[in-house]
Length: 438
Figure (tube, rainbow, N blue to C red):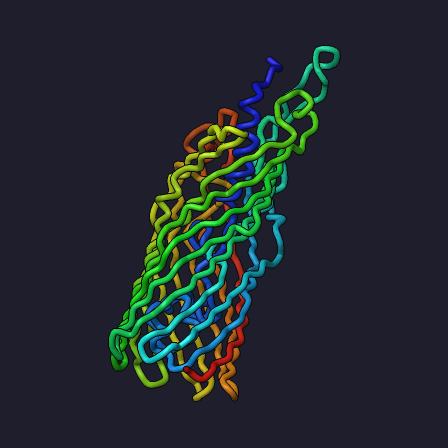
């Protein structure tokens, strides 16, 4: 009755922290994507893929560089203030995560000649942050009593390892080359170099630290003639091997042999492909409107296969079974003066997560994004920009159809029943400088 199989607890503990790496709270876009990669994007709710004018549109469509007659460098930061909570059978619980998260937004454009240009974008397109306190979900808070000495060590151990912290910092380096086929049409190709800079993920019994790198590619095109323009941008999926180590936080479980003090662990983190299509029209010389559609290929995030130990044996498979999801975006730009532009945007983003494998580590749902911003040009090629976005999640009243029977199968069960609420405040600040073309 009191015997605990070593392999079971190792599997349970390792999987709980590693799954947190790929399934933690994200408040910016569907799943754990963060599409806000420029200050102009924040102001227009990311409706920029068909914009040949603004510098902040280049990260959304590198082919736009061909329509800029100067080289330039832009440096900025994205600040994210998430707020989320859940009401379970034992009351309401606020997340204990960081008040503000910071991500870089760096873009550069180099005009080589009338046909060729090059670009570089550095941003954080994926990110996670969650911190649930132990005891939030009552079915996961039980204890297993141990026999007293001399038959056993006495006391008790947790019945289930609960996710308590999940932090994932991912940076993307995207060098691109664009070519102007004509004065009205340009194409671009580039690489997406992903760096999982830091993954520190805790459960109630274990801690995981790891990192990794991966590679993808991007393709884009932009057509602009008169007041009309249309753009397309595609980023491939990427599989990132995340290698790390985990250590046991519960000395009793180490003492009875249920957990090893430390061991290696690894998984393949599947980042989704992204397709963006957009059209833009200048209603007047001062006012332009853009409509975008985005498709995120989350169906590749179907399961997590956790491997550990020297032989890399499979320890655990966690089913997510996400679906591809859409986002619909509307952006407006208004040139108040020759040097000052106002920006407004709205976006509706669908969640890729159904009820069948709902996870408390990603209490995701459909959301509404409202953005506004301003850009102002100064002398000598300088430009400053600011943007604000409010992200409002639709409340998710989750009631699992499957009863929780213990062990590691938590996703989609009634153990995580609750009413999930979330919102986020995003602030973007950016400064850029243009240079004479070669």
